[in-house]
Image 1: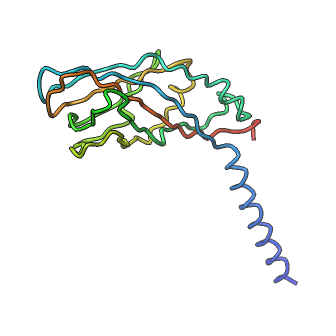
Image 2: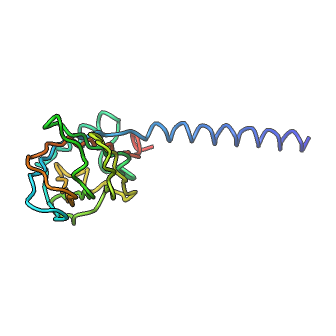
Image 3: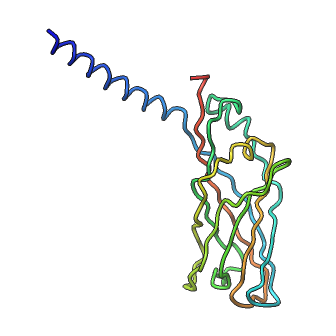
Length: 179
């Protein structure tokens, strides 16, 4: 008889564990943001160039609401992906860049490095995927807006401005309806 109770307890424990994992997936979602930046033509090589994006409106309240949660119920938000694509001029590539570093800033919060790529290969790439930090960014995304600060180091002169589209994908883990 003890064997049956033990077996029943193990089966119930397994179902409960699986149910918690499934419920946990319901509290996770992604938010995407897009912005752009213009890297100005350069007058030298190995010079740092700093460019700030315009404010990026988060619409976090509506994003959270559409996922059945509220900003007070957010456990963690971290950057899961960031990539950049040259949009103009069409003939440009990232060959002119040696390194890139992106920080996030928001009112009342310190700048925080969130993405970077060192030793960008000189292979004609028009699209790059950056390495990203695992820091919790919920306080930045819960704000009405944030800015991305781009710091680049060039490896060669560029005689024209280069327009770059930035795509960010943030992973959000929250409690849905307080669960």
